[in-house]
Amino acid sequence: MYNKALVIMGLVAAMLMTGCAGKAGASQTDAAQTEATAVEEKNEAEAGAAQEAAAPETVKYESADGWSAVYEKNSIEVIEADGVYFSYTGKADGVNQINVKYYPDQMPDEVLYNVMADENGLPEHTRSEGYFGKGTDVWALRTSMASSTVENATEDFIAVERNGGTLLVQITTTKQADEMTGMGVSDALSAVLDSFELKDQQPQTYSANVPGKYVAQVTDQIDGQEVTAEFYVQLNEDHTGVIHMQDDVQVIWYSREGKVLSAETGEQIYEYVVEGDMLYLTDTAAENAEAIEFTKAAEAETSAAVDYSSADNWVYFGVGDDKDADLFLVCPTVDTLDEEFMSLDNDVMKGYFTGALEMERGLYEESTRMYAPYYRQMAMNGYELDLTERERRLAIAYKDVSDAFAYYLENENNGRPIILAGFSQGADMVYRLIEEYFGSEEMQQKLVAAYPIGWACTEDMVKEYPQIKPAQSADDLGVVISFDCEAPEVTDTIINPAGQKAYCINPLNWKTDSTPADKSLNIGSRFMKSSGKIKGESEQLCGCYIDEERGVLKVTDVTPEEYPAVLGILPEGAYHLYDYQFFFKNLQENVKHRVELYMEQAAAAEQAA
Image (cartoon, rainbow, N blue to C red; front, side):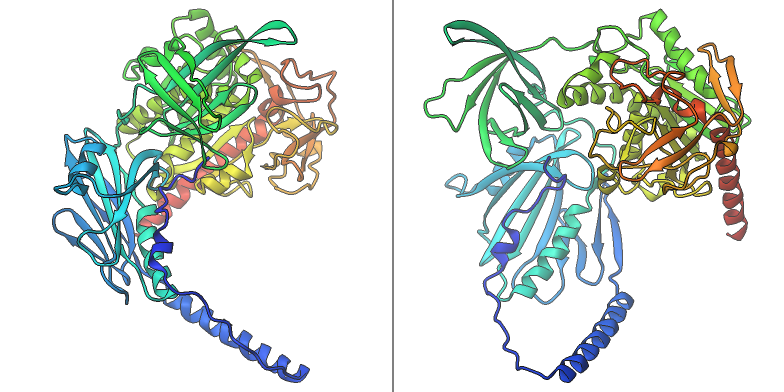
């Protein structure tokens, strides 16, 4: 998938005009080389110290239009005039700046035409599209052309549909006579662009008719036999998608000109036209290719938003009002029927849903005020589908969870510390909440800890979302406590596939390496009924250690015969269903400990202030 920042393609190349000249060196004796190396290392150390001391001061600009950007004060000046200018103040030729202006009640193509056209219409230009800003998943249109007002300069226009209007970002860059100057200008302006955040961004309506799943029945003759296959095109709201014919091809789709690009190479591979519920897809690499007709599949029940102002849509809402911290708890998968999503009109399924949460609540209720929404979770059979279709369904399920959390934040939180928790699919939803809501320092300061147990915290997730911080001990705050249990002989599961590396912490010794934890450290396993009553308890039932190669928790002293996998999507020896039950009381104590530690530190900070 493309990087989620709209790259100013060609910006550096347009600004650079010179190459690099080599330097000739004279031969030296070994002694001279040693002396020269020592001097060089000393100079580098001094230069590094000086550079650290002179680290640039960054400032966050917040606009009345609801957007913000960060800039380096020593190289960028902000001027508020006909929008907002971020002007490069370092030594450079010509004009180098970013101008940001909001146009209400105008769509991106209209704004782009108005600012670019002259008396002869649109000048020669190139067009592209992509993500804009810092982790916003906001789509933008981009146009680039030679500047008509600044000599030897390029104009890049980025048009973002925003809340009924368009936010236009205009970047003016002049070609530079030397490489270092060009790189300095590029780095300073690119840093501003990459830092953009849009507050209260509403869903974009531009090309809102396109997303969906389109299917086609295609019949062909193979070895004299008539064979019919089902193809489908899945185009998602975030402009990703998949085309399933002979193989699955991950794609990025454009709003303009019907372009479909390979997500792997960035090259156009198809073009599409949408007319009503029909999508016509043409292979651009094939000569004289005919378009394949696809029909839009019926929308799932999940199209209408859930009203989370209604108590009927919460299992727990403010339960335990005397506690210091809040818990936002997300239910695991309970719908095992052959449906896409759990129906909130199915009282039997809602009973199972409540029962699953009752099994977990004992981990948290002593320390937290509890909130847990009903949501239209992905049914169990979704885990048997290909990754693309599974992700589509999980994204739809997450929309409910996100809406519920947003309602809780706005109406219930009032600055209170938060614990996020979930098991299995619920854990997956917790990671998504951290990705969406906890990127700011303010929200990170609220997070006591997250307990997404039973779903992998992968290296890729942590790299892309630095707010996901794997726990390192029993005492750190604002971190993720994650593990999934297996027998020692298991090497591959749907949760921790072979070849995937995850972060894991041992809930008995609270270490992240392979140090074994003896079962004597296990202060109590607890197995629950769906009524919330205790089915059975056992002290020192099992020990565990971390398989550092895969990042999974290997459980000792029990057998797969005693604790079967149960679910058909899991191999024997996958102890997934028992993840938190094996270590119930250790986890319960840890939740209490982290809340107490958070409150102690908050009180100390308040007293110091």
